Length: 477
Image 1: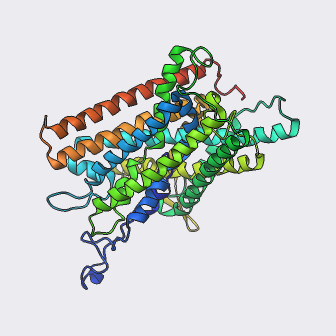
Image 2 (image 1 turned 90 degrees about the vertical axis):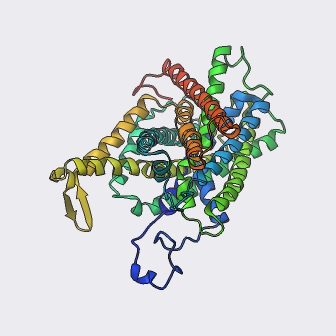
Image 3 (image 1 turned 60 degrees about the vertical axis):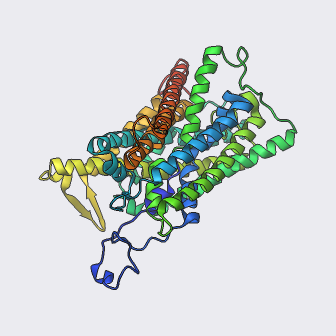
C-alpha cells in the first residue's frame, strides 16, 4: 500500500438514479441503476498499481537486509503470489452467486456473505487500521522533513559536523496542516488532493530506485550477503530473529491494498464478468508491482548491504545528488498529507454519523453555521482537531518508522487480505468442511495468521528496543 490512496476516493461514485433517462433501456445504466461502468483490465490495473505503491516501498531494502539475498526476494515473491490468490477469492465475492446483486464495497460484501457480526468486526478492524495508518503517515512525513533539514545542515557545515534536529516541531507542523485540511467535509472534495498524492508516490519511489541503480553502477560492487545481517557483528541472535519477523511486517505493509479492491471492481464493465476482468488486472498489476518492489529492495540492499537504512531516502541512506533527494522527500511529505486525509475521512464520517444518530437534537453536533459558501460545524471542528492531535502525540511518543510500519502491516494484511476473502469465498461457494479445498484454505489462513502475529511481536520488540535510547518530546536526531 503500501498506502497509496488515489483510487480510494474517485473510483467509486453512485449518483442518484434518474428513472426518466432509464426509460430508454439499459443503454446508459447498469442493472443497479448506476451509470454505465466503463472500466476494463487496463484501468483496473492502473487503479491497483496506484493503490499498492506507496511509502511501504521505502522500507524494503532494510527488510531484505534482514532476510538476505536468498530469502528476501523469495519472501517478496511469496507475498505477491498469496496476495494474488486471495485477491482472486475476494473479487469472486463481488456478485451474489444466486441473485447476481452487486456488493459495491468491501464492507457490503462482508455483511452479505458473513452476516452482521462479522460486518461489525470488520468495522473495528478497518477503523483501527485507518487510525494506525495516520500515525504511520505522520511519522514518515516527519522523517522526510527532518531529512531535508539535515541535508541543508550538512551542505552548510560540511559532512562530519553534528546536525542534531528535534523532530517534534515538524510533527506539530504536519499536524497543523492536517487539522486545517480535516475541515474539508467529505471525499467529494478530496479528488485533487488524492491525484497529487498519487503522482508524488510514483515520484519518490522512482527516484529511490534510480539512485539505487546509479550507486551500484558507480561502485561496481553488490553488497550484502546470502543470509542478511551478520549475527555477532551487527546484531545478536535474538535481535536477528526479531528483525526477521519485523521485516515480514514491512513487506506485508507494502502489499496491503485489499481494502479498495472491490471498490475498484465496481468500476469495471460487464461482460466479460467483473471477476474475470479483475483476476487479469490483479495478475498484471501485482506482477508489475512485485518487479518494482524487488528492484527497489534489491538495489537498495546492493547499494548499502547490511547497513541498509530503515527508510532508504533518509537516515544513512542516499545523500547525493542532494537536490534530487530533497525532491523525493518533499514528494513523500506531499503524498502523505493527502494520504492522511483519505484514510482519516472514513473515521471522521463514522463518528459524526453516529453522534448525529445518538443526539439528533443537539445543535452542537447537528447545526451548521454558514460562513459565505462554507458550512461550519462545531462538532466537526472539535472532533477532527482532537483526532489529529491524538495521532500527532502518539507519533511524537513512538517515532520509529520500521517498527510502526511492520506493526501496521501485521495488523492490516492478515484480516483484510487473507481472513475475510477466504471466509467469504468459503461461505459463497459453500465449500464443504474437511474437503481438500477447505483444508487448503484453512491452512493458508492459519499460516498467514502465524506470520502476522510474529511480525507484530517483532515490530513491538523493535519499538521497545528503540525506546531504550529515546526520550519522547526531548530526543534530537
